[in-house]
Length: 116
Image (tube, rainbow, N blue to C red):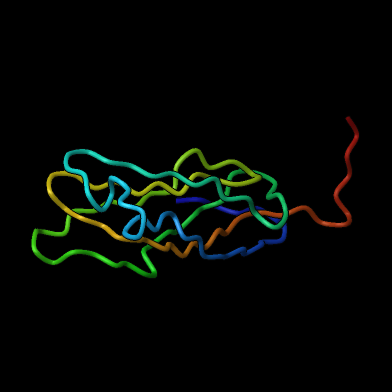
């Protein structure tokens, strides 16, 4: 559990198309085996510390002739951003993926002192 002390809490959110490979024959659409795509996401403002990030698929365009195998994760979370990572494997064919994310964490306050 992440506990917030007395600082204000900020919420940032957005969407990102991680890939769209059906038109140009990219390996998410034509390949097999383990495949991964990663996108660096920047927050609109920095948090005081790494926030909690919730991420999920908001659009998927997939081939239904095989099983759908997919994983989406927020990795390397910092006060300034994170990596949105999508993975698939075996014979799953993914044409495109868009993710939606929400970050919640402590933000700076105008009354904060910086004595460094």
